[in-house]
Length: 151
Image (cartoon, rainbow, N blue to C red; front, side):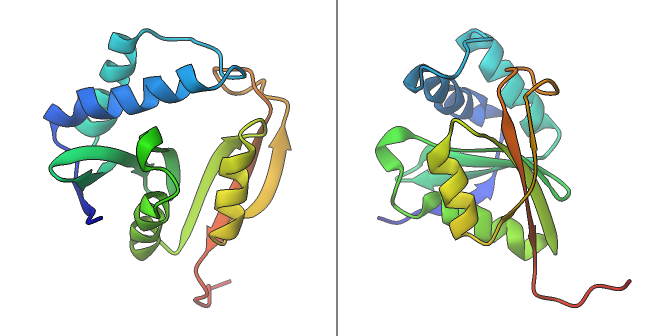
């Protein structure tokens, strides 16, 4: 399978929104807070901010990563394409552009937590979820490149 990464275009809001919306449908622990249209609009706003990189296979968006500076806001892969290295490819691309990254993952999303730990992220903090929209306990992960940092 060949996957290409590119900056998202406004026309990608539907595909990225569908991937994100479908993720919440797949997991009983994930509360349904927004309609499909609201989720597409949310992805459109991230695209408008120039945060989103999409992964394409055969001219079809199959995953995306949204990042503002060093903070990863979203990393989602279409269900049929998970486990094929696309998430790692998106994450490695973000690592090329930053010397440090951080993100939050829901504690209930054990697969995501394992994925980030396998890809060099370390747990920095845990919360009860009071600070996120879903009110789900989460984990903050951080990654640092191996480069020396000025202190």
